[in-house]
Image (cartoon, rainbow, N blue to C red; front, top):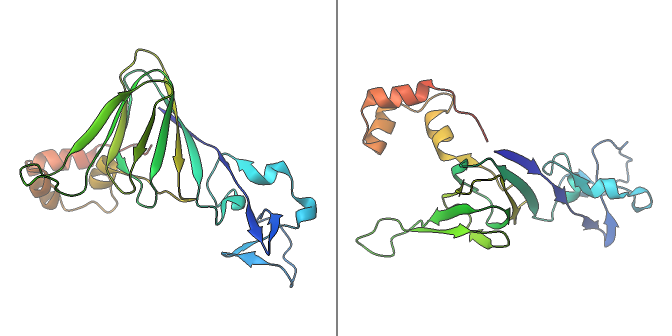
Length: 199
């Protein structure tokens, strides 16, 4: 699975269309918005609004509260359970078939602790993942799948649950994880010993 991040945006400083960069010589009279310098509108170019990264590399995203990513899935691959702590996500399938869903954060039924909302998505289908809820995607098709995800944050954040819990530095105490997951401590220690690849 590959992640490609594509972002575009602009913001206004003193009611003028501008973009900001970090490569400027900062004059004494420079205008700053949220700690980023505004670029002179006379020298703004399309390249000031497009790059494949987050707000630190594309300052034009500053204050917009948006970002976009493209996700490519090999056959039968997953985007494992994860959360975006600072953003909701709108998800659009472009190619092949994905099984996607999220888990609620509160009890809607005293007999059910958490509820899974999931479905099969085909090209053109759109799905929404609420901010901070655990969600995933799984390519159930036989070919490569492609999807785009839009976020209402310039820094949506990403916490892949297994990576965070079993691959943190320093590691969480194994007895804490053993109790949380009702596993033998040896199983937890094994899980903590294997490399957790960040996606």
